[in-house]
Length: 70
Image (cartoon, rainbow, N blue to C red; front, side, top):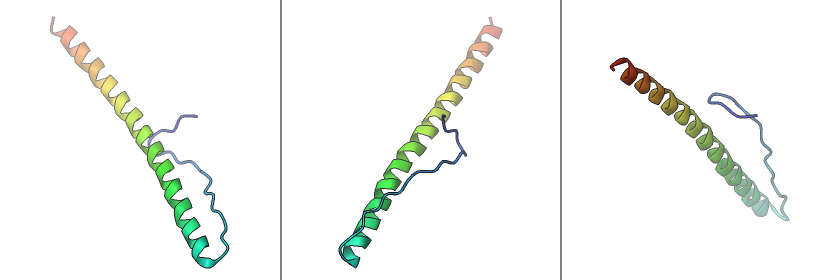
């Protein structure tokens, strides 16, 4: 299924355990950063597709107006 603007989706956040508290906190931060990178890429892709659709519509309108001027 293709995501559209304003749609939501779920993803898995994988966090490795740790031998001690500091390692666990480091792994949580790293897992969050990796998830944010993935979400940023998805968001950028959805916005790009939306912009492409808007551009296609704008081109069609301009073509129609140009044909009407003939």
